Image (cartoon, rainbow, N blue to C red):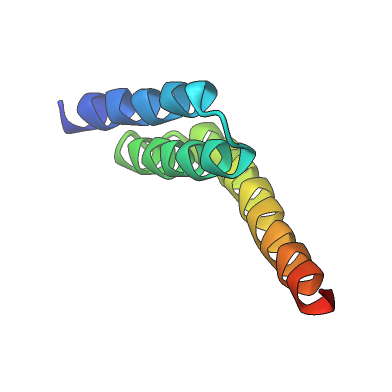
Length: 78
C-alpha cells in the first residue's frame, strides 16, 4: 500500500515536470520523481527500477550542477 502510494507521488512529480516551462524546474521535478521511484523500488525489492532511476537521477544532478557552475562563471565574467 505504501509503495503504491509512493509510486503515485513519483508519477505526479514526473508528470508535473513535463508541464514546467523552465528547464531547471523540469529537472528538479523529474529528479524528485526519480527519488520517489527509487524509494518505491527499495520497498518492492525491484533492482531494475532502482538502477534506472539512479542513472536518470545522476544525469539530472550532473546537468543541474553543471548549469549552476556555468551560470556562476557567466555572472562572474560580467
